[in-house]
Length: 223
Image: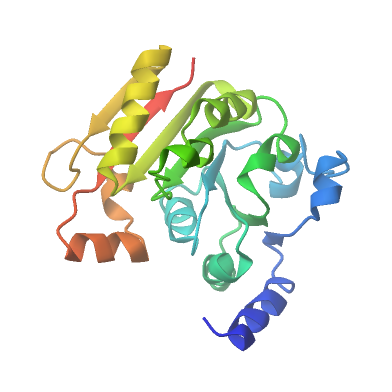
């Protein structure tokens, strides 16, 4: 993506009411006033669902279309990517969608305890090298952070093309005593995957499918 195109998208993001771009200082210094007040921003007390590392925002928007009775927030540090999702949500008048430009590591500053009902992680970088373990979005540290903002019955979703990420996550979950609710090693060949897992396909997912890569899905609770 050219620098001019990125700049255009960054500027357009500023005009979208569904895009929030707090500074790091604002977040870390606990001056982010939406923490604990997201229901007021949405204007209702519907369950809040996050997509972490939302990329182009396809899953955030797709879920919002499927479940108008829930509120959805896509989070990514790359605003030029989720510009597409924010623009689509604006064009389609989806009032249950927001996007936040921030780092995943800061979500505990963005949301209050038990403020989130579900978290989706879709096609994250598997960070295969051992020295990159701390960056895997389902490692023990990240799971502990997610638990803080999830409700008591909060649910996690992981959808990935990476056999490594799928296996690593399942191994970690079983080893730590977390509750695996459902696991499918190839959602398009094995029956039983939920509709939202099959009905929504991202740009990258389509590329993986063209290469005949298996798409996996895991649903679990953090204990």
